[in-house]
Each structure stands twice: as C-alpha cells, then as structure tokens.
Amino acid sequence: MPQVSITVNGAGHTVDVEGRTLLVELLREKLRLTGTHVGCDTSQCGACVVHINGDSVKSCTILAVQCDGADVTTIEGLAKPDGTLHPMQEAFREYHALQCGFCTPGMVMSAVDLVAKNPQGLSEHEIRDGLEGNLCRCTGYHNIVKAIAAAQDLMHGRVTELARAAE
Ligand code: FES
Ligand code: FES
Image 1 (cartoon, rainbow, N blue to C red):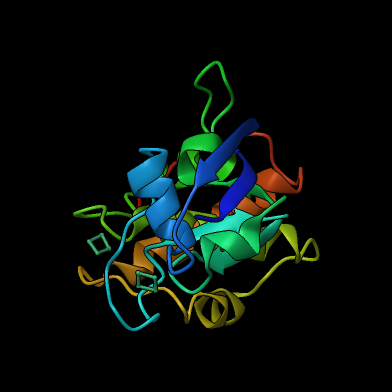
Image 2 (cartoon, rainbow, N blue to C red):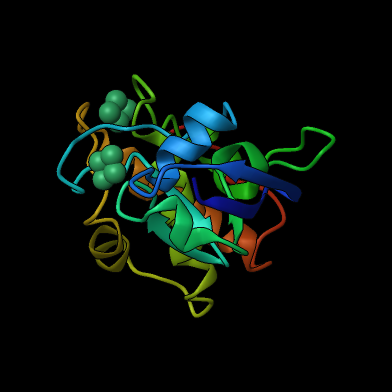
C-alpha cells in the first residue's frame, strides 16, 4: 500500500493509503478533519476546497498519493492557535454569510485564496466570478459576497476592523 507524507495545518503525517484514495478521504477518514465537506460526486460544489501549497484545490479531485510532500491547510487550520479567527471567518460571522453552513468551509477557503491573490481589490462582480466553483444550496450568496468584500479590506490592511453589518 502506498505511503503518503503530508503536512496538514502545520503537523506532519505519514499515512498508508490505497492508490485510489482521494485527498478529501485522507483528511476526513484518516486524519478525522471533518471540517472539509463532501457535497457532490461531480467535482462541482466546492465544499471540499482546501489549500495545497498555498493554492485552493477541490480535495475530491486529487489523489492522496499526488499530495506526497505537500503542505495542506484545511478550515481547521485557518484560525490562529489561540482561537483568533481568520479575517475571512470573522467577516462571514459578522455578515451572516452562512445558513446551514455546509458550503461554508469550502467558501471560506476559496475566498481566502481569491483575496490573497488579488491585493488590488475585487469588485462584487469579480468576487462572484471567483466563486463560480462553489455552490451554496441555501443560496446565501448576497451576504457571502458582502463578507468577502469586507474581508479583503481587512486582509490587505485597508481597515483594521469590520464595519458593522447592520444594513
Ligand atoms: Fe468536491 Fe463537491 S465534494 S466539488
Ligand atoms: Fe447552506 Fe451554503 S449555507 S449550503
């Protein structure tokens, strides 16, 4: 059985996997990191998005053996060790950007990568475009976009705290 050495949220793991094991299965079933969700069988929903070496990837679309030596961050690794939320998580909370929460881990991970790679700032249209690989069955897109717009100002130091989401 192949062995995979992988760093997840800063911790090293060496795990025996089958050749057909997907990264999302390794994360959820071997490492018990169940914050990464599985919402489809068709690589469409984005609930499974994690970061691999700094890039957002649907973890149901890549084999675990392809991640040998990789540095992976899941939703569990986004907050600081003292529990301080990442600005994107803070913004999702502040702007009520979730309903059932099933899509939220993937939305947050995709949004963090999208914003990090666009320090010039994204318009509402560009945010919606950037999220086309993430589906929300509760259709709460309006507040998700508002949260990401606010988080990008926080992440890039244009504001130090979130405006109140009292609209
Ligand atoms: Fe990966 Fe839906 S579970 S895209
Ligand atoms: Fe329910 Fe998005 S909040 S699927």
